[in-house]
Image (tube, rainbow, N blue to C red; front, side):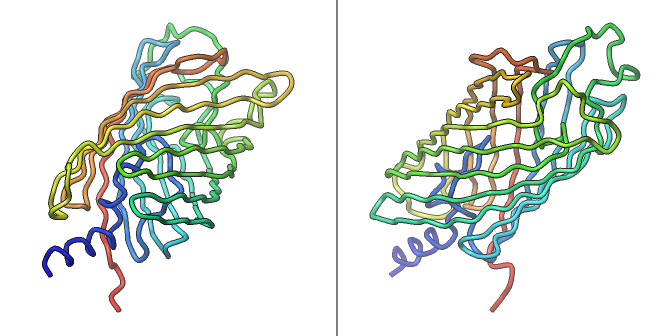
Length: 288
């Protein structure tokens, strides 16, 4: 009877039963459990390619599982990357709806649709001044995103296949960029982009589940790409991002990731990212 109870607890939380789907740089088609709350803190370090300083971005995030099909994220961004001092950059809202789920023993296939909107107050070129190198080179940055760089909207589809301890997921999305609060989007920047990813996660430990208190060790490798679509600015990149993840007591996770460019011809602020992500989940936040 005790073993049955433990197994049911693992299935209900979802955080352990599908740990290898908790990708570090992309979202899976699966959602967090219904009636749950997640608190996330992402720390990113960016060695800037065109200036002699390292940018740092802090992104606190609140995640709510409204049902087994719908979850919503609200994120804020703080950084010294584009402005003279470490300061607030803006915020974004993300929603994901799972519309397909096919479950089998030790496997499942799921699909979801997502939308995201961001309002950002950064300039499009780094402001030189306190904390920044005055000798920064003139350059064009053609890599825009909704995680602190530019205002805009995004939408797309996610498909995830779980096969025992291996989970593979793909994402295809469209981005539309707008002007920032404090800066106009330069005319020669692409306003339309296609983003895509292919992620794989493998549950290395534990070999056999005995308790929800067991520590999980997951290994990931993700391919992350983008293509600008405007005719006068068509270019692309593909990055690789290996990562390791620890999950404690089925509720708390620590992610360590390194991301770097494999291929591409897109001018970018940086082509290397180091990330440390901390997350804690609270289940059954509304009592019956």
